[in-house]
Image 1: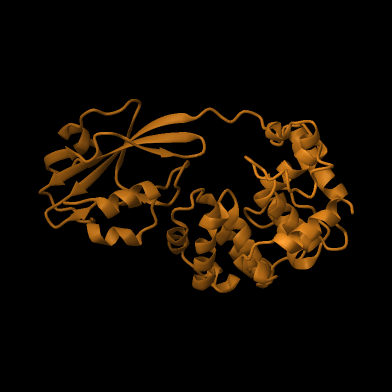
Image 2: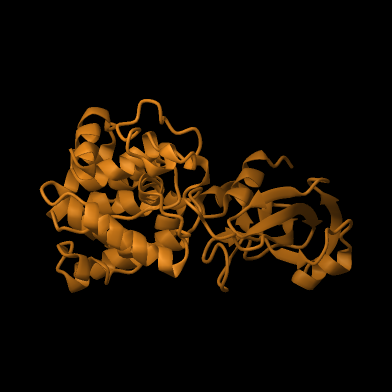
Length: 344
């Protein structure tokens, strides 16, 4: 058997029972692919089921408010995926009459849909001969064929796409693509892969040359940026607070948060003047630090060292929101955890 045939046999015997494998509905396959980008399957399944239940069809999703979509997405991170997903749903409805495009060339026109997602939908749902290349596929191909090109370099991306096309199954592209990704997720894992009982253990280049742990090669990541966030939790006598939407560029676009004071270094104390700079109308009674040790919230390219300062005021927050109502708003997990544990 050749490479693709072995993958197909392995997949038939080892595939996991996942909810999106019970259908070829392109809408549901697309939902699963968007949700699973940079997300573990165990974490992604509840979100997939939530979205399918809330929005059974692409028409339902296209009609949804962005705030509703972001709230359902809360906790997955990389919120641009959710915003792009909403735009794509509207595209499918307005530009394709509610029917998902059937070809790679049309699928890739959708907002947020790149080469991998377009290839996956086209091959799984419509049988188009398109190879998929995700992190799992990079790992399997680089180890089996002994390719030492960095997978995140332009040369590597081009090379692996051509290689994936060369070795793909032309008889059953749907199961082959899913099988190759599944093989990387279950068998040829990043750490401690199951080489001893692998169907390729006699032909894998990396195993024969003792380079399994060295492949795939990836260029060094971007340097992690360290930021200091200070959230001011204003509270008036009626337990109203200020909760506002992030509208600028950068992380958490259109999510909600407390007024933010970002500093170059960790803030040891917060003066009344500093608090009133964010809201000059208020009379501040008392400021107390909720957490003496900064909460470290790690994102892909930055770490946020965060403190919450509770600012009590006897001024009425006229456009304030009842603290107990905050949970209805889409917000970063960092803020959500604070809200759920905060005691007056």
